[in-house]
Image (tube, rainbow, N blue to C red; front, side):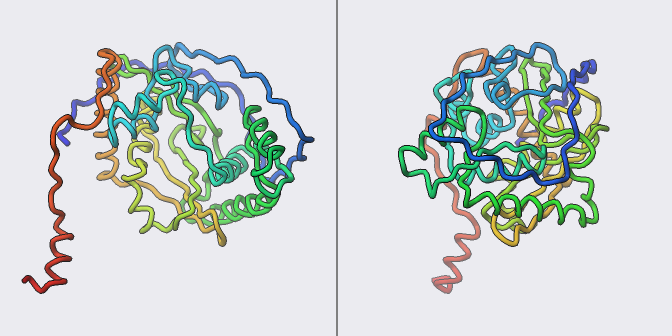
Length: 332
């Protein structure tokens, strides 16, 4: 990818913030299971943001896209540069209101651990069912989700609590990241506008009060060791996320923050590692984000969202595949 032009430096926008209490270091008790059946709460009205700044928004308002025009997020940017504009349009709530992301129980468990670690709140409703296969279980599960909370089976709750406690213990003993999720606020939303008119939004797991450090928590069913994480940095778009979030803070405050991922395994012993990127990965991430912002602007203006290339493509023979065959056959 060729280098793209540097961003023009604009005026620093004012930030708009609401006070947030710092999260408790104590793990909350399991929420009381609701009586069945539940009645789904009505949809909450959307909030519209018209000025760049740092805000506190509900999950519903953020994911519905609260900007004046369809905005670019890190997840949409990943699809834009990793797949195609057609994929990005399909996944966008304003351009494809019927889109529904895949919901799996493993995602719910990770989301609850995420909320407990960062916010110290009871984001879950614990339900006393063996599984989700019965009609009553499904009705309760769906109603909890409609109320903006996360349904969790009772049998998984203790494991989630232990997972969060283990993460806190490991971070407290970490030589370079013991301040993770301690000095700042969780779930702050950045809203900014690029020089080409594109609106962008990012919901940060954690931003320190001095704006100089971002922490992002990820749980995984895979290994969380640094060598294993290196293999998924690009396939999972972590380089794009890191660049996009740093860019938002830089545009709004003039500060280029450090960014660290806290990655924890979702199975015992719940080991965690802290991952940061060097200048080489950051450069590539910045290049991808630059391209995503330009592509998003062009597609919005033209109303055209191309998919994959409209010509025959010819994969190249990877060197390692050739070497593997030569080794196997002795060069014959």
